[in-house]
Image 1: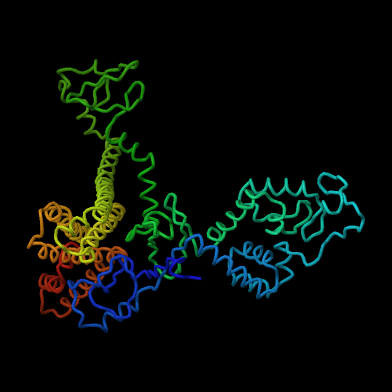
Image 2 (image 1 turned 90 degrees about the horizontal axis):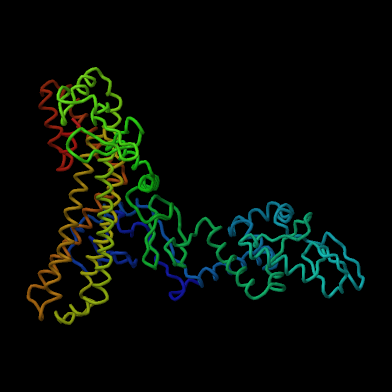
Length: 572
């Protein structure tokens, strides 16, 4: 069934995902035949030495083995047919009955077998699979339709397994209206209100039109994906591929062969290392009206007369509300401007406001306005950078497409190099695209990072800054430095040096982002461990009595690595 032509089986276990902490790019594994999103089989610029294979094997064994398979329509049909045949054979029932059973139990073959062998009679009753008719029809030449009550020849009357007689015309009308109503037709029952007998695809094939049969088949195919908890459609617009996902860990990133990457758990775009709850909150915040209200609260004041919000757009404190109100008032104290003048401080100050402020009259209003302003500034800071990286990623995708369709061929001719040896350029651009995606979501992570956790915030900003600096170096090299070779007149002696530089930057940037992703997925746990270690060493120094408190703390921080020192200093 799962041939190379029909099933695109990425066999992408989640350790092969872009940021899983996989060290395969650092050493050659002869048993690794996976088509990794970034396959570094041909490069020799790994960052780690491969002299400690035992540690690497131990690390790999601890990683969750998750995999997914991308399915075409033909693959879905084949899997559906196989499941129907399996149930039909094991339970010794018709394929139509097997289909009805599988639909009822959400296409779970195991569930069907368990329930059937535990209580066959109960399952038949629930699903509507009758072993014998509940209505005994006479052997007369004519029968009466249970809907239109016309007496018709027996040849013009038919029934489901229950035996209730209805004419072909009424059956066709009943089936047609149900199919046109939507996927509910897959749970079709006998038209008799008191009857629970299921109506299967055999009756559809017998009485429905070609268009209705096509609709029914389409509903049945879609139900195999939509009712099955292990499969989902790719959410990309216009994509008709489905994904079969093997659940077993926390990494839900999936890449469809249509090039769309999404989170299996929430079906939003792929968002590692940020969890689904944070993504949902961030997307809701971006689309909610709350930020509009925050802006109004932070940047405007209500007119004392009509209460409409007014933004101050000039230097002085003399405000005039818009028509038809036209009320003139002081921006600071909101009092009528007629009561102001030289004695209250002129146009650029207000003695009344200063006096009232000292008495605490405006404390609550000012506090709320200041809180709203700080909240808005924080949100704007993170949102602008989130959106900027989204735009940069889209631009990188366009540049990647341009490189693959036009520039690689041109560069191959100019440098007299086969396109297969220019793979490092494509890898660099793929790296840039994915790094932009990760960097984008780190800003959502940073927005929801608690303000009081100063050590974690400093560690997060350090990792984010290192990763972003590496990405900018890589992006500049792939974009600007490459351009001179694409626009050159012929082979360049510097091209080999450029190859080594771009390949090295790609590897280094990948390492930066792997560190960032691992740290965020672990909840920046390294900060807590560093703080605990520093605290333990401080206590030990106190107990010995031979080291001063100051010396103990210095010793504790001097043991940690570069970023750990920053964390300890902040944490202490």
